[in-house]
Length: 322
Image 1: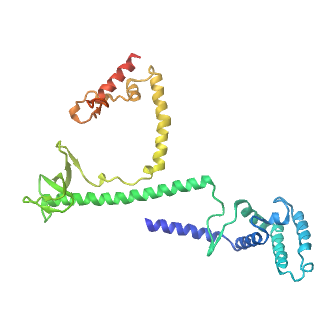
Image 2 (image 1 turned 90 degrees about the vertical axis):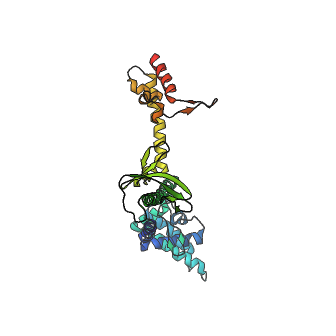
């Protein structure tokens, strides 16, 4: 993936450089020479003292006027003036030709690429603030996606290692599957070894259950959670910061508006819509706290644990009274 990104970058740069034609390079050199001789920021039009909308006749008139002043016959022995006179003739020739003038006008409006040693670089257009922001968003999102891919690959390797260690502890060094379930301890780090029962121990360990080819993590409560490749979070463009930010802003803008509409107009809405707008989940009201489906909260002052269904129930009753 890294080499593909580098190849793409070099391909884009090469395409930009190869996009210039011979006539473009001649204009670039002439622009640099005019600025060096006549002052930085001098353009073909400003040197001839004509507007960029001047007609061919106006350009020819301005050229004749300046060429009479710079002619070598009037400046004998002045090598610099002779160079300026020759350069002025090339400038006038470009502006009097419709095709070459159109080419120059493109760079006159959008900016001329800079010269750096081996060739011209970056695009014909000078990037504005919007272009820079878009570029940074794309760049940072691409880097974040690349990091996600690297983390996903690392997580897959860790999952495979844990599964292999669990099977090794359950089946032995020969890795012959054993029927039924077997509880084992798997080392997650530190120095590894085997106890008298053949379990892999040492360092930080977790309880796991191996049942056939399936491997489970065993909670202290007795619940078993399967562990496989799905335990690793795959990369996704929708999980990059920009998409997450847009989603969050959308929820803030439209989610609150929908809740406000339901609360302010309770009559036409159903009971489930009122529960959703008030934050009450009716499905948890009938479940026991021991089922693990209801998450308790702590009171900020007393530290007592209060089921969230109580708060939701009060809100629901208040809504019904309205």
